[in-house]
Length: 418
Image (tube, rainbow, N blue to C red; front, side, top):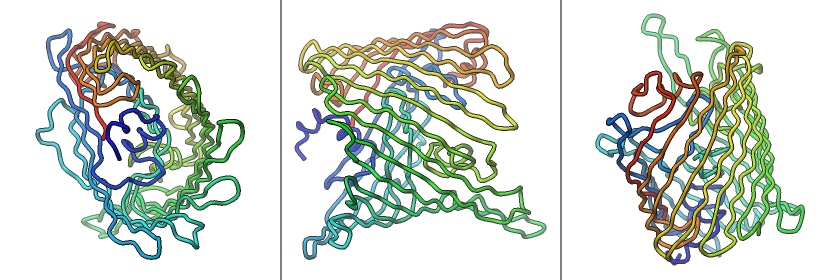
């Protein structure tokens, strides 16, 4: 694919290539990279402002880590119009601003057969892959994530939409008691169902995604194991001032919340020790616009409630915007403002955090999604007393702010997908 064209693709395509959503990897070398360096108003390591727990932080000028994922997809055979493609990717992550010591791991390794006539032109695949993980970019929140090792079918045309089914084995680890020699496991099997691209209005489609999780192992060993499930419904509206809008409602129960182990995302298997009293409800709206070549913006509003008998109920509310204005084809100004509120499960004061970033940016194009971006940034965070402990605990610099309720960071950052 022509890389100049890729830079200007709509988010639905560009971010899918970068993040590996439901549709397949394209031939060639593709990937994602972010890295940077910075410091803080405390004259120590770079600071990143977030509340942790069940929340995500606004990411512009607020990512203290380094991350790479990338690899190659190649057609290895073609028989009677059916293409067989192999994909191998690696990834590396470091929670600090240096890749030194980061462990390179295999992120994808799978083979798919595309264009099968008995699947009505659909695809069959087996292996380890990224699968159906769209995100709210500003928050780096993959609001649903079906990644894993398994097999399935995809893009099978049925009625007005397309179905997909996949079977995965998650958290496939065992431990042996050195005395009793009894083996316990955290494993679960996961079935994912997708019915997507169902037209419902002019320029609008619906996606339906469901998960059934079945716990593995003996209930008498290390606690009772529980099954779980989740269901998600998304409405996607195209051509919104040159952009698009996604509205979602999600509900998960037990391991279907994704909480506890794995990637902590709805759609994957959470801890099978979580019973049916553990629930997660999320409602969000994520919109991006590009009304002119030089101006674009992303806006998000989200409410998420987590509830359990042991932990009580807590609600995360978040709202934020990132306007981008290009002064030239290769230079733009970005600002991001986001605010978060998390209620206390004990009825105490809610935690509040507001973060604002200004980032002059060298960019391969004027659009909101044009990448690479080479950014300089200044970030300011302000929080209340109730949030002080959470901000310190989730700051890469450590608890450097003490009892203070504000701080700043500045530095440089790279982000690109290709």
